[in-house]
Amino acid sequence: MKSFVASAREIWHEQLNLVNVVAAGYHYVCDLQPVVAYKLDHQMNTNKWSPGACHYKCDIEKAVEDVIARVGKSEEEREALNAAWLNILSDDSTIDLVEQRLIRLLGGVFKTRGLHPKEYFRPTTRRDVSAKRVET
Figure 1 (cartoon, helix red, strand yellow):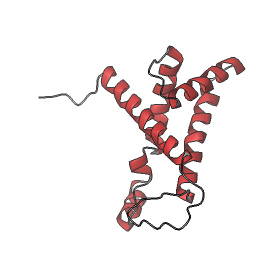
Figure 2 (cartoon, one colour; figure 1 turned 60 degrees about the vertical axis):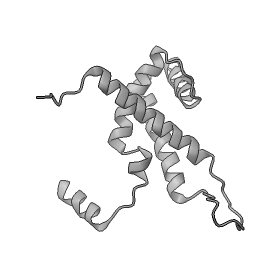
Figure 3 (cartoon, helix red, strand yellow; figure 1 turned 90 degrees about the vertical axis):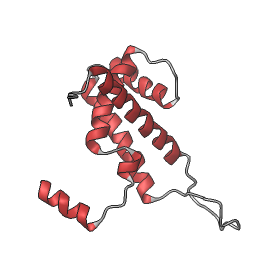
Figure 4 (cartoon, helix red, strand yellow; figure 1 turned 135 degrees about the vertical axis):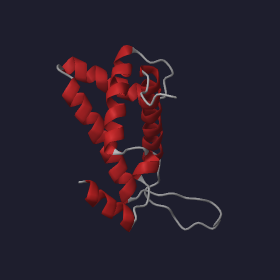
């Protein structure tokens, strides 16, 4: 019988994957056009800046800011963590110790706040709202 306890390696890969997916979603939202003119080709998908995209971007920035403020004891450490976040966003393939630490912290915060793009932009139904009331 397989155990349901995840190993440290599985947890690391889950957190790394979540941070990479959220970073990709952050890039996508930042690249949206604020205004989309009339499109002649109806087959072409033109996404534009929306209130949901704005909230998503702000929620990610707030989560990163909260983690850096909570963990960074000194100004230098906060600057190093901020630089690590920018390196994660730049898709740098090498991960140093500061980035590993930040990924572990952000993975938990992103999961708790539901910042995975598929979860965040999932349309809510009446059933979802009533289920949340029962849980709380």
